[in-house]
Length: 233
Image (cartoon, rainbow, N blue to C red; front, side, top):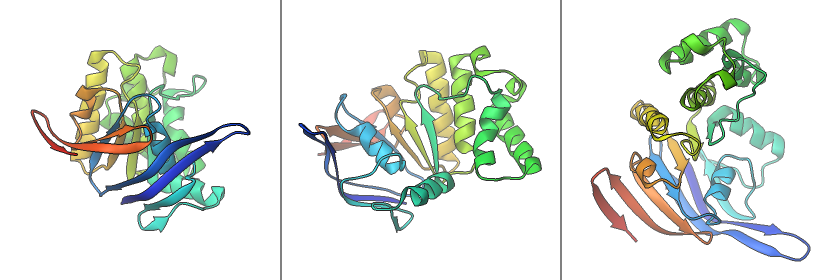
């Protein structure tokens, strides 16, 4: 599903050149749940942004569903992003002025889905995620856990082929954070492909494999079996 090979990213200013990623190679198959971990500045968020087509690589290859993404025009990347990728962010990124219903519906409007189908989809996903009773509320009227459920609903509303989660529990207490991780686990059990960035060893333990990054490179991987760690270095 995702094949990254010898991927590099360089940020340049007039005075400084910073190599954020250096010859990264990873493969994510359909149905995988993979975590990326590393200290601040390790390149994990940069890699997630490139996979999510929010940023571009400087060199190397990134294939999504067999199609090369490096070098695509912005309109082509936008189309591929809308058709294939759902995002879950640490800060929820909900629009405070819109109701829960409208926040979830927004991606469908961007994809020109008919009103009747939009209504069916929003109500169905809200029911699945246990937020049907909150559809008329606004984000600031919800708990952090409920806001993240709305964000998850918005991420899933277009039936994406891959879910990208950037520190999905970073702004939540342990109870709400655990609920979100259990939700992601349920989505994975249902066939979802998930790539998650986190600082939390606990959150990472819910995934199948953890990829560790430092200074823009992958330096180890760990297969997660909840209580048994098998290292590949």
